[in-house]
Length: 129
Image 1: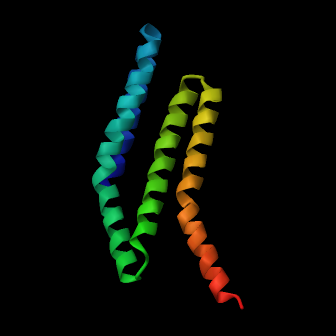
Image 2 (image 1 turned 60 degrees about the vertical axis):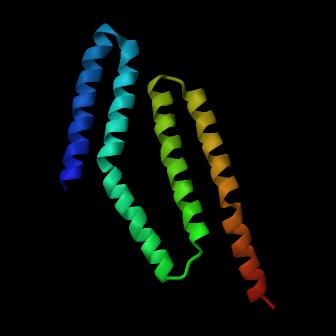
Image 3 (image 1 turned 135 degrees about the vertical axis):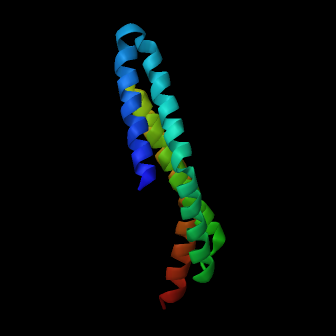
C-alpha cells in the first residue's frame, strides 16, 4: 500500500510544481513531468521485478516456452514506454506525433508477436485432422 501513497504523492507534488512553473517558464513544465514519470517508474520498479519473477516461475512450472514469456514481457514494456511517450506528446499538444508513436508501438508489438502467432497456428493445424 505504501507504493501507491508514494506514487500519488509524487504525482500531486509534480502537478503543483508544473502549475507553478507554467506561470513563469512553461517550457520547463514538461521536464518536471518527465522527471516525475521516471521517479514513479523507479518507485514501482521493485514491484515490477517481483511480478516478472513470479511470471517466470509460473511459466517454468507450467512448462511454457520461456521465449514466449520473454516476448510477452517485451511487448508489455513496449506498450508502457509507448504510452508514456504518447502522454508526453499529448501534454505538449503534439497529438499528431502522439498518434505516430502509437502506430509505431503497435507495429513493433505486432512484429514481436509473430513467433507466438505462428506457434499457435502450427498447434491448431496439428490438432485439426
